[in-house]
Image 1 (cartoon, rainbow, N blue to C red):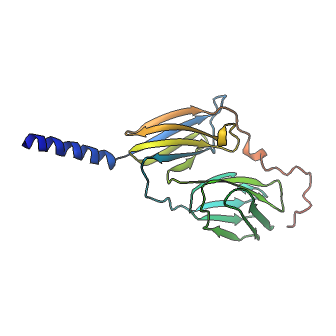
Image 2: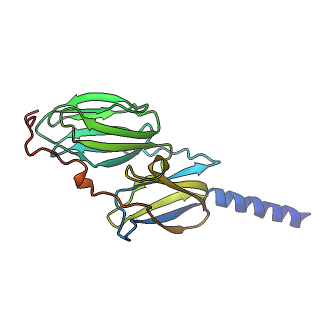
Image 3: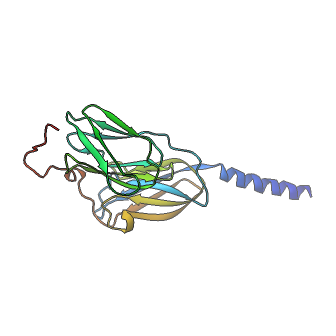
Length: 219
C-alpha cells in the first residue's frame, strides 16, 4: 500500500512539476528567396489553458519624418500605447476600421497616450493631413508576442508548458487574415523554422510621399 501511495505521489508531483515548468522557444522566419523576414509579428495563443500574466510594456509609436515608426507594432489588448510626435509639424492620427476606431490631433513634441484598446485585432492607422502615412497595430490576447529581428529570429522565454497556436502575422501576407498558424505542444525548449509564402515589400517604400513636394509641409 505504501508503494502505491508513493508511486501516486510521484505521478502527482511529476504533473505538478510539468505544469509549473517554463521553456524557451525560438522561431526562424525567412522569405521565399531564403532572406530573413524581419519585423513580422509572432505570438503564442494558449489552447485549453489561460495565461494570467499581463505584459505590462508600453508600446511607443512615433511620427518621424512624416512616417509612422515603426511601421508595424504589436501589443496585448489593454496595453498603454503612446503616440510620440517627433516631427516639427502637427499630425492628425486616426483609425477608421474595426472596433478600435480613434481620431486625434497631436502637435509637435507632444505624446498622446491611449489606454482604451479593448478589442483584439488589426488597427490600421493613417494621418488625415499626410495621407501617404500608414501603419499597423496588432492587438493580441496573449502576453507572449514579439517581432522578428533583422535576422528573422524571435525568441520566447519562460513559456509555460502546454498547447499553443503559434501565429505569424504581417499585413502583406497573402493568406487568410494575413497570417500563418501552427499548433505547438511546449514541453521542452524548442526551435522552429518557417518560410513565408510570398515576399514582403521594403517597409521604407510603404510610406513614401508620392509627390515631389509637400504642400502641407507646415502642418
